[in-house]
Image 1: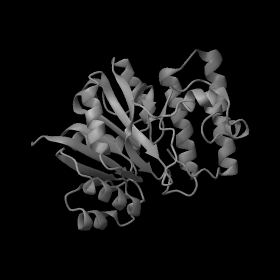
Image 2: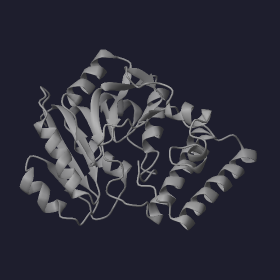
Image 3: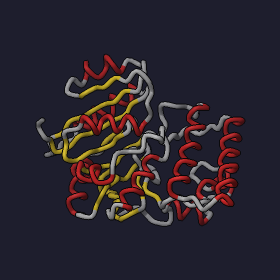
Image 4: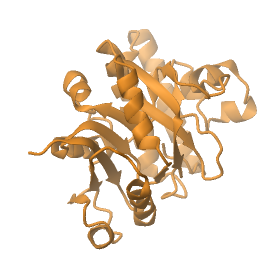
Length: 290
């Protein structure tokens, strides 16, 4: 099997228009890297099966018969990848000029790097807090879209978690970066292991980055690489299943990395379940799913 410099892995679900824009941005951006693109389609039924071969015949398209989630879909792509470098990319992104080359260069500049993430911005250029500190017990109450943060935007828990006191203007080692756009290498995946498929959609990126740290490596944020991210553009609202999966991911991450004993486990379980129940009852108007 011929080796390439880079494999780009895109897990797609029902956003074929954005996927086409994402693929176009990849192919129009000059890079000296030899690369392939692998799209894993999670039974979208939105015409992707004809759109991709017609407009991007060079893309390797895998059509799943069911929605297997982000982690399992990414691992499918990893099993097919021929690249020495690996880029996980959401279909609702646009790769900025030079971003792919810069991410690869960042990995080369930092021998201790296990992963690097770009600067994610919205379509209007606004900064997205895509690199963060590891979650604490208070994080669930002070996430980006939580009521607590809306009522108290400058609270110290949110600032710590989102790194919002920092201007995001220089390369920096961080705890974790968003899986919406993350570059690593084949050797790192072999050392750390693939994504944990018990996470369906949420928290698999923070879990994997934590395992990168556990392997003695570091995670970097590189603002010189810019990627536009239409967060959650394929879903006007979080449907009930994704609300449930978000909170299941929280609990799984807690059990893997943060357990403190039965005296705390039960209150955490009750608190997360109550949070999920409240969102299901109110059908949260959040538009962001990552």
